[in-house]
View 1 (cartoon, rainbow, N blue to C red):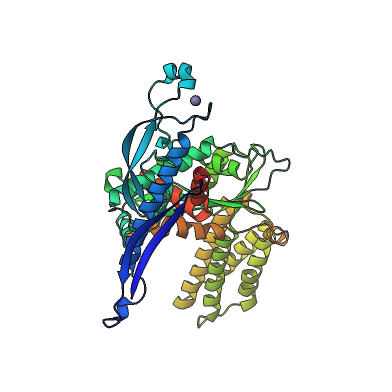
View 2: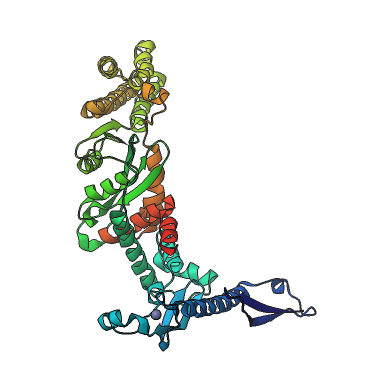
Length: 452
Ligand SMILES: [Zn+2]
């Protein structure tokens, strides 16, 4: 059989135009399994041809429409044609864009402005379509630049993609995101009741390029949540002039009003909450992440279990079992002093157990070490402990496990240590910014707004 592809354009003035794109032949006698239906190569050719036709018709119609003088409705003359190259997802095309003479009715401004008008110039400021720019950045934030270029070329009839152009494009989009959000009238809708904001913070460590004299780079990743919205972010502190103002932008975007106290949930690392503290001028309630506490309690519990099970254990089991069991309950309910007291008793009882029996002594020392660990962790973060049970019952978050998902999404999938890539602070920052925007759906949204 033979398939012919004909495209018919109907312009706004009612005229129509037909284009014959091409044909596919599928001879029945020589049918092969891979010869059934449309193949990727055919589809790419057809898409390219289709884009060519649509683009040219659209430019023709738009140019015609812009010849009409807005002041006197007269038709303005065409001065000349300039050729422009337009890069799209479906191929690179050289198109002719007309320049139009100014109308005689507008003679006065003619003198001032001079020169012919180029009505299509503002459509192609970057010589590429927003969609192509967005997709390049989106893929570059998820895959290596080379891989991203390959994926684009595999599925689309776009022009040859180079890894460096994907990287540059991603950089441009990252700058656009930062810039766009700074000029956007953030929180313009004056909220009477600013939402309670919680910031979940965590960090990802990625390999640093050798010229920066250190092994690792820290990417701060996190998530800001209000009752109905959330926003992810990722940044490398060395790469931005002011990480605090960057974070402030993100908070403002969720309706922070410069006054309200922001809740920060993170583990014991003080650098992370300090970043938020700088951003909001100190109005921070820092809560130690329950998950990290819970892990340390678990270590104590396991060590005690090991001690009780060790052969030759001669103590009173309940003396060790009880404190280990109640520890979690006390901490969950914010009874920190009681919890630390029972930790101390546990340590004292373990010290008494030290005997000739090597196994028991070792097990007892392990319990002591784990207890000391938890004890100093709690002591260092005393101000950041809370009644977790009560928060939980009120439906408030107690754990930054939600930020840990961000670490994987923003940091590790693209820049994780297993990928064996080394990063500069700027490069890593750009990828993190774009990746966070992609995950939030902000990238698509922004370009759709720009295209509208
Ligand atoms: Zn006119």
